[in-house]
Length: 115
Image (cartoon, rainbow, N blue to C red; front, side):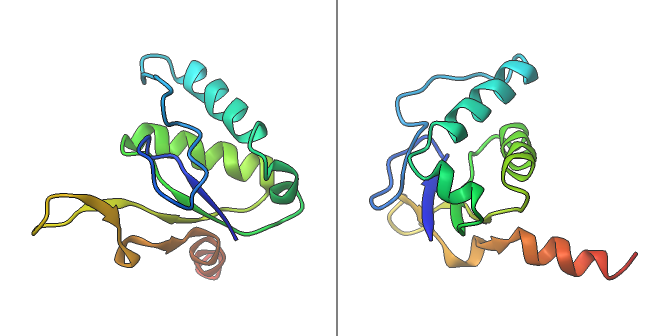
């Protein structure tokens, strides 16, 4: 499984294409183009095109997360598993929490049953 981090903060063991990249949500079309370019430049892009599974750490801004998921589905034909960074209430440090992991493709497939 490919691990890709779009939070903008370094996470060991994950590709982190947004670390050191500055972007704003001022212009949705610019953000969409930036995200598309980031995805197509990933070293695992070809694997993802062939259906390889991925776990994606989502960006904090909801607008950017929505654009990322829309472009991801358009490029790869499926949704990735997603996870968010959360702040530990004791240490105050951010980390990944299994409780925030969502398999969007399974959720999508199950939701289609309700049509």
